[in-house]
Image (cartoon, rainbow, N blue to C red):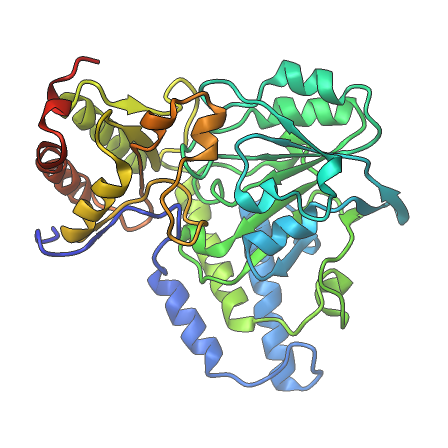
Length: 389
């Protein structure tokens, strides 16, 4: 059980701590010489490490091994997938538009390689789920295009209706990209059921190293054009000498995360305890996305009158790390575009905090959070605890 002075990390959606087995694997690989493109023994050993990891990541995504392309992380993966230029059965295909939801990660919000004029935003409901009827109406008469929707939201944990979106894409002749960065290791990944043409992943979200990710296609006959060109690495889909240590660590993390994705009871129980405790302490607590399916590890909430920025500092002084939402804005605390798209009032959106758990979170961490929270609320705005729901 952690002592009260021990630091507590509840920001796994920003980046999970490195798993011990991953660290061991990377240290071992870093001790080796060899370029994976070399034909000598050292090069073949490096190549073997990469291909073993490719198999592990493919299993995490229920994909074929050759469908996995390693890249530098989730942002590069999304930039690769969000391309108007694809190959389909060996023939070039040029996609007309990018249809993306209003709650995507910033690396998708900018549209990848699509021009701004060719991007269309699809609204979400008050739980942050894509409005399926609007999506259907918007894409039904469009030329072949790309639909991009994240599997699970990084701020709220809300899971999108991916099978229904995939059906809309297929029925109307469009390609479908799923940003699975937050979902991997936290829920089953099923590109076949989703009818997703391409998935994107990032290792550090589930205990792998930073700086490594993957593009995973459902069929190697239908692939986006490469973003990084050069040598023939990654079957000509991503040029550049492979980061063997990071890739090997990614594989180990994927293997452990796959086991965890099949049994999320521990995380589910901790989230339920957290949210029940929050409501007991402050009846006016708002939990975002609670009317939809959410990841077991994520809770995004607000107490009116308790600014997130001030609360974050208070928790940090107690050596507890939480977040106000996405960790991709250079440390800035600003109004969440996700909550704005869900129709949340700006004043309340500025009070949103996110607790995200993972492979090393213990129930004592949640109890410590709940022990500190009323003290912080009382210090910042004592009246907030007594407001009615």
